[in-house]
Length: 521
Image 1 (cartoon, rainbow, N blue to C red):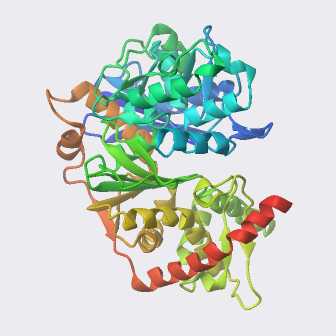
Image 2: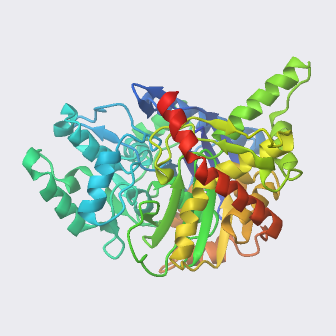
């Protein structure tokens, strides 16, 4: 393969996916690796060994796909980039040793710290954010804090190991600490405020000292070193030297993959977690604890509604149904299982037959839950059928998102288009139809919707290598990538909207049941 191709690799919650594209964004090859977080000592985590084993396996599968399709090994690329689930806590000492196990975005143990920082900074600091984790460690009196020399995200860590550069794309950085979009850096006033707030602890570091350098999309961010090439491809086939663009979070790659980086555009990513992003024309009128303010990969402010739980419960039931088919002596095709599950939901009663379902595998800060208990509840008169059960599943996956989107509607946030991507949309039109009912807005999906993140990261790598002088990311995507690309748009159906609202009425009232389950199970 030549230098005219670009590699994007994204660490999702359940899959590490690698995508190779050409200069026009056309996918050439792919590879992936399945993994799963572990719950150890009250902490959702992945080990660093899992990070590297998974990365190498995903890359090896992509390289094998290249060899099979094109008859030649993958020896070099024109650029690459790495993205990952945002937020979390990866703290290292001066020797590069991980001080405590990786704390992922899924952890909801930082409530006191997040509340204190939100009040201190007059800015919503979600529990997931890196400095919320840092401050909770301080409040807990954890001895490792004094030894921190570098704090980063998963994408930032991988980039550091492959390039030697301690940098982070501005979108991913905006999930660590608030960003000043004009300065393209962490907000200096808020950094100083935080340093003053913790000065009495006497730590040997200032906040800015331990955070990555912030870079916008398109900025140079280092090259693949010889050591990095060996980490990625132990066979030695991949040659070092290619540029690596600023590492990003899954929110930024989702925006890129759906061409939703311009003002008044939005996208919703629905997979293991679900989040909606709307690029803002003006600041919100007040701080909302349900709404995160992050940025695009070029630093524009974005209102983000992030919910920890989306398709995990759907996935769990898919394997239950596979087990049922196998018990009947039938071979289960998982794609067919998922398609049947999603399509059957369209045959259900619009309100899901009175069923109530919570998909909370983990806590959900938007609704005030620090832990989760997946739960199906029904009254005696509810109609429990497979179709109603599946519509309740699809509704439940979006219910918490709806809470946050209603706040943006009250803020009169303008939105010209909403693009969907992620596994929730893989079955044609079904996810769109339910999402349109939840959002009260048209939802469009492109052909690339099912694999948005790593493809979006590959696009950022291509932008860094190929952009013309002065060409913005918005113009690059409009002119070079998405011009003429096919998409499908589904308008909200009035009956679906009414049914979703009825489900939401039950959902809101029933949150007391979910809280009781957390307290007693």
